[in-house]
Length: 197
Ligand SMILES: NC(=O)c1ccc[n+]([C@@H]2O[C@H](COP(=O)([O-])OP(=O)(O)OC[C@H]3O[C@@H](n4cnc5c(N)ncnc54)[C@H](OP(=O)(O)O)[C@@H]3O)[C@@H](O)[C@H]2O)c1
Image 1 (tube, rainbow, N blue to C red):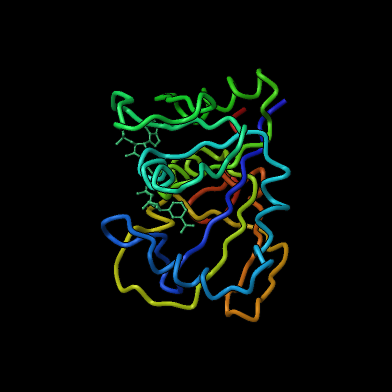
Image 2 (cartoon, protein in one colour; image 1 turned 120 degrees about the horizontal axis):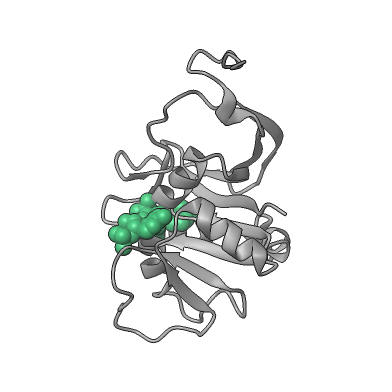
């Protein structure tokens, strides 16, 4: 069985997931204005997840959260660096420098088939090899002007299906998109590639 990879992320109206230095103070401020009891679908999303895959930058941000937010959920941190972050973290955390393909195959063999992929660069790497199935993107009505982007350069257009959009009284607008299974088979012009005989 091939793992299903999902994204659940908040972006500024101008497309950033963090400030240039990685801070998400703007997101914390926006979340503080959300009425108590409203989690914008996060609990339902995480209930359908077997494991989390995140980039090292995101993990460093998560380490500042107290308490640890992921309970017993297995977490794989992608990094090329020695895994010494100067703080203890739960035994459910592992480090890996595998490719998205190798990692998802290994986790799937362990029965971890529904993966939450987090971190801008990490998400882009998964998208580039066609491994993201769906994205829940919550647009926060703030302009940051600069920062770390959610999306980046692509070798070709990727066409997605829009599933749903919901707006919240706090001003958040959340949309769900699904990647088409054949997305990476499309040529830069959008036409299907020629078939080799
Ligand atoms: N707005 C939101 O909802 C939201 C959600 C998540 C994160 N964030 C913020 O976004 C920022 C993080 O995003 P980001 O784009 O900067 O980075 P990121 O994806 O979290 O981390 C990038 C790093 O992950 C490692 N990496 C990724 N794929 C790898 C692979 N296949 N093999 C080995 N290493 C791999 C590399 O680490 P090394 O450099 O160690 O090799 C790379 O530098 C943080 O500031 C975080 O707080 C915001």
